[in-house]
Image 1 (cartoon, rainbow, N blue to C red):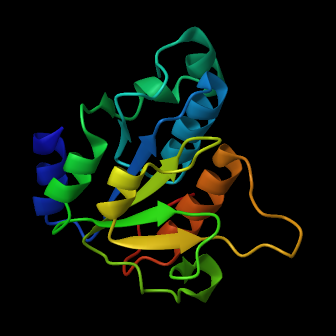
Image 2 (cartoon, rainbow, N blue to C red):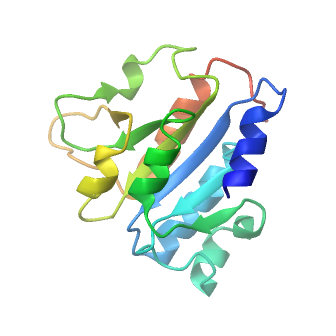
Length: 176
């Protein structure tokens, strides 16, 4: 994994390194949906915490429409340590629901997302991102919603955030 990410960062390409990190995802359908979404938005690797469900479970594969085989999906022993190790190379955005001290996706301008690379961190369906992982994220990020709606399903939020981050990068990675 480290070699794959390092090669991508050191390439002469103007394309950002895009990573999706999943912390404690329990539902295989949610996981499969997020892998498919990650593939759609040009994510280079999906990182799973040790307590995520199995990406190669039949239901996850089916929901991913086979994209689990097209994009590197790697389980790490300690997601917080992984984020800490890559902190200087990747800006990590923790998807949060209720927080005052965070960025709001629709307030980020085009070109404001670092062109060197980024990592979108999504948390457990019920509990969100664990404290250890959250402490190792560079920034907190949320999606603006109308009053009375406090959260979205994790695959829907993942799609919105991946699209938003990719759209606001400081380069032009192709999505067709």
